[in-house]
Image (cartoon, rainbow, N blue to C red; front, side, top):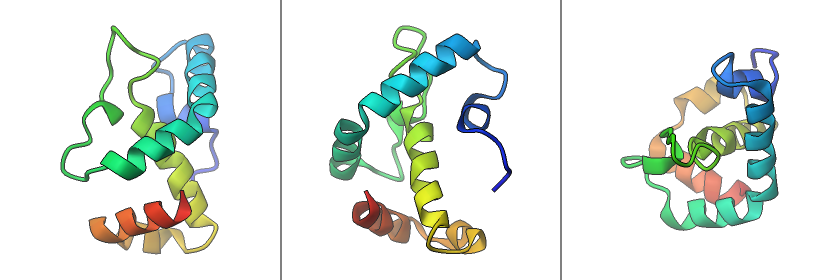
Length: 100
């Protein structure tokens, strides 16, 4: 949408590029496990560790942003961006279960 890299979209200048690469690799390597977990426990009202940042476990934290970006990127292949912004929470969950 904004013609930027995933790294910039997720972290901007907040973290060191080497750390970002490590974080991205962790998420890439654990995609199947994370999608399985998300499908079983995702809740709009309590995103919890998916969106938080933990100094004790920085690699595992904020993974919701990574998978959210993947999800929206897949949605954008099949619907206009404006429609994505108009989706209701139950529609988002239904689409997530179908796509992932």
